[in-house]
Image (tube, rainbow, N blue to C red; front, side):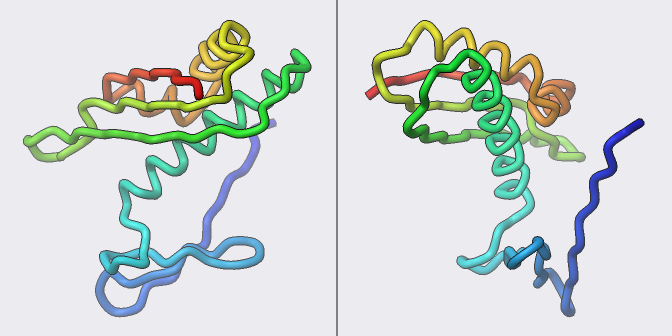
Length: 130
């Protein structure tokens, strides 16, 4: 049976809204303290990728004390201005480089948001360690 997903959003006049969560909300709009549509899309991408990555590492019993993600996107000039390119930079602690790389390859394969975006954009990922 398919898993249902849903979201609750409310907008005032214009582009000033709230994404309602279980215990809070995220402002949506063009103000400095609000998320814009591509902020949300990139956040969804990294959240899905990281969750999938963690699931794989957990099954392999590989610890991950921290991770930092940066997402760079480029939109097409033609309408509709869809994403053309997405590059993700992941910074992970040193010590398990080979295991992290293998797990991230699997995460890219199984993350549904990554796969959805890969149908319209060229996707790339770079792992850095510190």
